Amino acid sequence: MKNKKKILMITSEVVPYAKTGGLADMVSALSLKLKEKGHDVRIVLPRYYDIPKEMLEKLDLPLGIPTGTGEKWTAVYTDMLKKKVPVYFIDHEGLFGRAGIYGPSGGEAFDDNAERYNLLCRGAFQLCRFLDWIPDIMHCHDWSSGLVPLYLNTIEYNNEFAETASVFTIHNIGYQGVFSSDQTIHTGLLEQSSMLHNDDMNFLKCALDQSHIITTVSPTYAKEIQSPEYGSGLEQLLDYRKYDLFGILNGVDYSDWNPETDKYIKPHNYSSENIKNKTLIKKRLQKMAGLEEDSSKPLIGIVSRLADQKGFKELCEPFYGCLASLCRYIDLQFVILGTGEKWCEDELNRLSKTLPNLTAWTQFDNEKAHLIEAGSDFFLMPSRYEPCGLNQLYSLKYGTLPIVRKTGGLADTVENYNQDSGQGTGFTFNDLTPEAIYNVVGWAVWAWFNKPKHIVTMQKRAMERDFSWTDSIVKYNEIYDKALEKRRS
Ligand code: ADP
Image 1 (cartoon, rainbow, N blue to C red):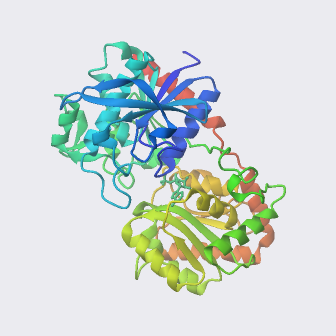
Image 2: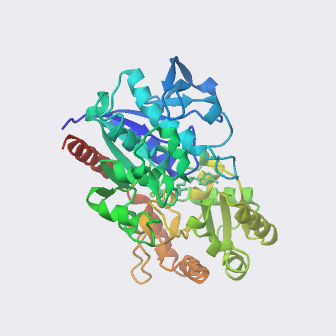
């Protein structure tokens, strides 16, 4: 097996160019780590309208991309991610020249997404040809790159790509890229069965059917998605492919998320050895959020997409969620940063106006995300499901004890508090109900006031846990070898 491989990441998001969630962080961090290990890694994504051309370099080519509805001519731009990893941007005015990634901010998905992301998938092959750089591995991320394994097994099977293998990573099985079956026309492929699921075109199902190896982003989620409760209708296919399915925990890019070096909390950086400054960040956050500047009050932070997946119904649906009761009956403060479903943004804004100990910012703001991670005492994630979750990993590093539902990557990374011994790195609960969230937050607040020594030792323990990429990179390398073996056989 080759020790140093050529790896192309095909993705719809990567920080700092385009991000709606953890996918963007993961692709960037994984690529940089693989590069550090000596692999030749490159990334391809669309050039969305919001990525300014001025910060990129234009390659000297028009790229012709064949599709089922005719050849599309695109420009290609490039940049170096952190001066290390080449990133290529496929630029097509008609399909990507508009604001938004999958749809306008806060709106419905674009109705031509099948055509848009088909162009990315086909374009990945054309780009490699143009660069005269044929990857050993095409590593696809989530539904938007889900047709790549199919092309590799059909029209790109017996050519320059004859030795290329596909790895597909599920970041979130809740988003599958489902379109009416007539959208398969964009692929130009006559044999369509692997693209179809319940009579619809389904990008994710296609990838699960066709890729050499499938990974997902935590061991527990890999098991969960083989069950009807978590499999979103694809559990049987995943069960069938269980010997090719691996759960590898995402790592954290500690060059971005580390209280010792974080530029957003300067000059009050802190470490597990010297955590005093955390209180100063807390005060800064309280001030910014218009909350009472009192370090003795337990401050609970949330940074999240406002989606059902994240437990927001149980937290704040009118006449059902527990957030208002938590703020009224428990001596605590809340600061919430998030964007997403409109009802949820409206409700959080309404509660924020009526409850003095709750501030909600319904916006996407990286600086505030860092401040909340650093300045809060606890970080709440009552997720219905959580493939990996990055925020709880950031929280651990910042000594901000996570309060999480025991599912997916949250179950794999947060150790529950033992109030007798003081062991643990956070607080976990099982049932997703408003009562259970109320109780677990109440438990954390109880520990804050009654077991302060436990809280301090838990913070230190949490900060010393290592969720860097070290172990996961070794596992990805093994997976790439397995995929190449499968390709050969
Ligand atoms: P998911 O990918 O399901 O959204 P993760 O926890 O894996 O959840 O990753 C979420 C990422 O998005 C984190 O880096 C988090 O800080 C960031 N994020 C989410 N919402 C916001 C927001 N409103 N402002 C800034 N960052 C956000």
